[in-house]
Amino acid sequence: MPMASALPRMIDTNRRDINSHRCHILRISTPGARLMISIGTADRRTTVTDGPGSPAIDSSASHSARVWNYLLGGKDNYAVDREAGEMIMRMFPDIARIARQQRRFLVRAVRYLTAEAGVRQFLDIGTGLPTADNTHQVAQRVAPESRIVYVDNDPLVLVHARVLLTSTPEGRTDYVEADVRDTDTILAAARSTLDFDRPVALMMLGILGQLRDEEDPWAVLARLLDALPPGSYLAVSDGTDTSEALVRAIEIYNANSASSYHLRAPEALARFFEGLELVDPGVVTIPRWRPDVADAEGSPRAVDAICGVGRKP
Image (cartoon, rainbow, N blue to C red; front, side, top):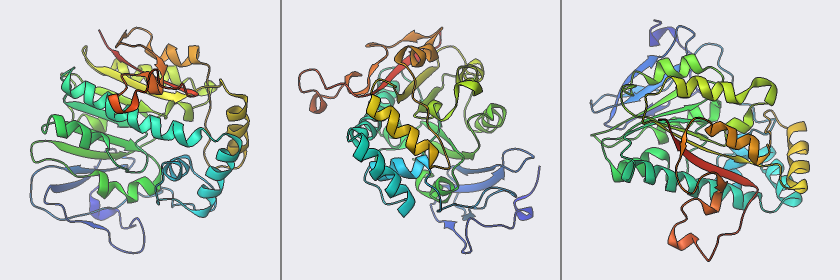
């Protein structure tokens, strides 16, 4: 395994040190030099670096994670991302509401998985840029011993990994730089933090839409689920092709972005849960999945995105 000293290139020209008392190790998760930064309980100082050949941050083209950050009201984006977000909102004003609803679903799903299902391990793929109530924050509020592995391949997310890499002393939070298609790398790295003999919640929020049908996202997901033990859970949310305005907006976005997103029919998204035991209320529009009292004004208005949680028998 390569040593960290063999990786001289930093995230940027300045050293980026993590000063949390819970930082304790920097290691490469595969011989291909993917970066994993681990959080535990030792009092050490760790420098964030990335592997040889990892892409630099490209601010000349919009990227889905940064556009989503803008739609959520965040500041970790560039002018080109804001332009893309504004274009989508002009064509489909409800997109910002979908972004907010997806974050609320994350909170409700993680809270259910920890408080009611008893899950203490999370594999969150397609993490995106940090915002309020990230997976580890929600889980560790309920169960401080929870362990979370975040996975993303956006260099800007890597820069902000130090925000994600905080943990209660009882728990642990790790970050893996990898593509969702690279399931072997993800699983190998996650095993250093998660116990695959115990249930794991696989969080796939907005990430399966990043894959084209030709890439068979159902098979990618199956490879991940096959590695998890019975009693594990899957949480999915993604946009649907149920609005002509949204379909057109996404077509234009894809033609002008470094990344692409692929809306699907609700029936196609429901296939991600084949073989799993659906948690009530099943696969539904995002606002109607176990809404909080504050969110429930009668029956919450549907959006062009659906979600669900399923248990592996």
